[in-house]
Amino acid sequence: MGSDMPHCHRVRHATVLVNPHSRHGAGQAIAEQAVDAFADRGVDIELIVGRDADHAATLTAAALAADTDALAVVGGDGTLRLAVQAAHGSGIPLGIIPAGSGNDVARNLGVPVDDVAAAVDVVVGGHRSTVDLGRVTFPDGRTELFCTIAATGFDASVTARANRMAWPKGQARYTIAALVELAGLRSRHYDVRADDQKLHGDLAFAAIGNTTSYGGGMQITPNASMTDGQLDVTVALRPARFARTTVARVFPKVFTGEHISHPMVRTMRGREIELYCDPPALVSVDGDLVGELPAVFEALPRAVTFLTPVG
Image 1 (cartoon, helix red, strand yellow):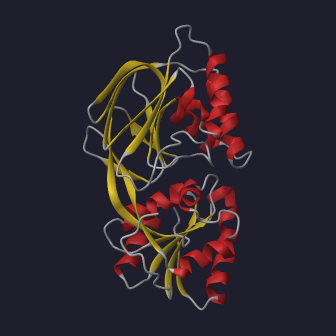
Image 2: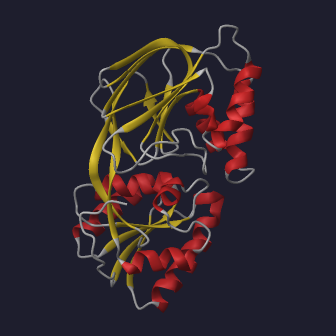
Image 3: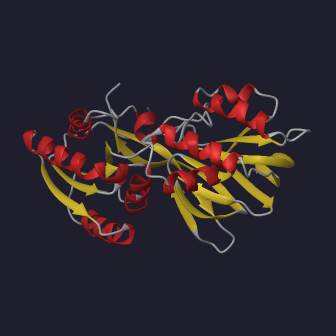
C-alpha cells in the first residue's frame, strides 16, 4: 500500500465516530468494545455519536477542527464515507473499526473485520497509507466522494433493496436482494466513456470501482486498485436474447471476480468516467443512494490517508 508518510506515528488521542445503527444495531456493542480497547492501550478518546448523518457530520467537522491524532470510524462503508467527506483535505488520518454489513474499505486495506481489538491495534499503531478516492459529479454541480464502488442500474437497485432489508446479515443479504431485483430486471441504453475509450449499448448495469469489491466482498471490479490513480469500470451487456437466467448464472461469479471473463461482461479503466443512460438509472456510492445518471466519475489520486496494518 502506498504512503506519503511511511513512518509510524503512534496515536495518543483519537476522535471516535460511532454509527450505533450499523449492522442493524451491532455498532453500539462494537463501539463499547473499541472504547475499552483504546483505554487499555492508554489512548485518550473523544466519542462522537450523531443522531443522524447530518448531526454526525456536524460533530465530526467540529472535532477535526480541534487537536486529534486520528479519526476512528466505528461503522460500515457508508459511515466511513461520511467521515471521508469531513476529513478530506484536513490531513488527519482515518482509522477503521469495522461494524458494517460490507466493510469493503477495511477488506481492501487489510484491516481485520471480525476482531475489534486487532482493528484498534491498527489505529493505535499509526502506520499511514495514502490512497485514492472517487468523486461523482451530477449535472446540477452536486458532488459526492466515495471509497469503494459507484453502482448504477441493476447494481444500484440491488443496493437500495439490500439497505431496506434487516435480514439476513452480510453478503447473503445482497444475494437475496439481487434475486428479487432480477424478477423485474430491465436493460437501459448506456453511453460510457472512460478517458478516450467509448462504449454504447444496452446494459443491465455499469459499476465504477476504486476498490475491488462492495457488498461484503463481491468482486465487481476485481482488478481495481486504491493506489493507481484510476477507476475501473465493469458493465454487463444485454444478451442478444435477453434472458434473466443468463444474468442469474453470471451473477454468482461476482463473488470471485470470474464474471469479467464472460462474453456479456466488458471492463474499462480511466481517470474520468462519463455515463449517460436512457431511461435514467439510480446511482449508489459506498452503499448510499445519491442520485441518478447522467454523471461524471473521477479518480482523486492520493486523496485520503488511512491507518493500515504494517506490511
